[in-house]
Image 1 (cartoon, rainbow, N blue to C red):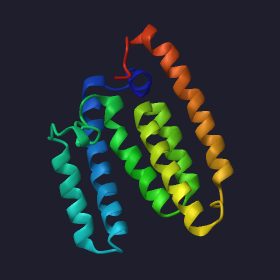
Image 2 (image 1 turned 90 degrees about the horizontal axis):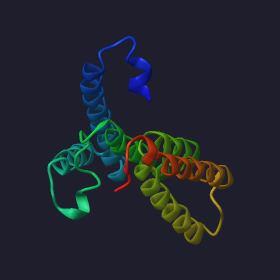
Image 3 (image 1 turned 120 degrees about the horizontal axis):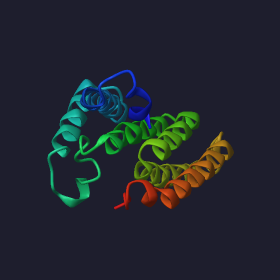
Image 4 (image 1 turned 60 degrees about the vertical axis):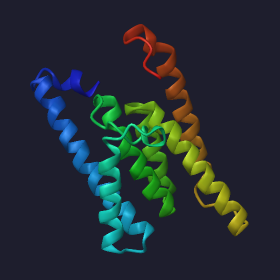
Length: 168
């Protein structure tokens, strides 16, 4: 969709390569932010997480396949950045950014959106039982997840007509 719109102005092959580097840079930055957040702001946490995410790009170990191969195609290239943004937002309790990440996942790479919804659901349930209250913004988040479900279903119904089976 993005490449098709920009193909009139730019070389699509060059844009695809540049976008891959930009997404890798964004993922590296988000991995650093997540690592620092998990360790309470320590720089070593950010650096460790960047190393972990970078090494996962080359693994064939099944639990890390989701993280691996960010450059496996432009749609898949968006997955890691979107999931990292959603996880950081969930840990910061900013459900607006979580919802935005879920919608971005549905638009650019739907399997990322499904993984993010699962993670966020677990975080909301954990907080509900721990704090005995529903986190603020949960209803808005639920409506965004429902809208995302509609986008996912629409994409799955029409994807085989355009590109063949893409959800594997």
